[in-house]
Image 1 (cartoon, rainbow, N blue to C red):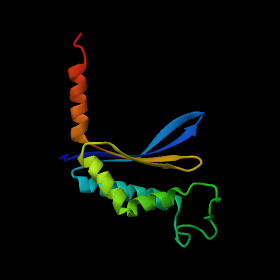
Image 2 (image 1 turned 180 degrees about the vertical axis):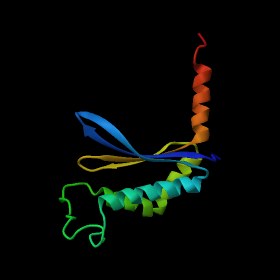
Image 3 (image 1 turned 120 degrees about the horizontal axis):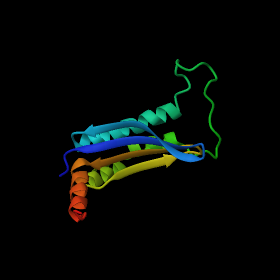
Length: 136
C-alpha cells in the first residue's frame, strides 16, 4: 500500500505561440483519502471560478454571461468527476496500485490537469533509474 501522495493542479494555455503551464496548487497528501479529497476540492474550486453562481453578491448584476453552446463545459465535467463514485473508486484503485492518476479537461483556450501519484512509486522509479545508469 502506498502511504503518501503528491498532487498537482495545473492550467495550460498558449502564450506567445508556446504552451505554458501555470501551477494552481500542490499538496503532499499523507493518505489516499486526503489525496482524493484534495483533487475533488481543487476540481470544484476550478469549476466554481469558471462557472460561478450568478446570484453571488461578489459579482455585479449582469457581469456573468453563459458561454456559447459549442464551448466545452469544463465546470460540468469537473463537477461530474467529483460526484461519480465509480470514477472516484477507479482513481483510488490506481493510486493504491502506485499508478499516476491524471484528470484533464479543456475548453477552447485552456487545459486543466489534476495529477496524483504515489511518493513511494516516485522513489522506486528514481532508485531503479539510478541502478540502470552507468557510473562513468
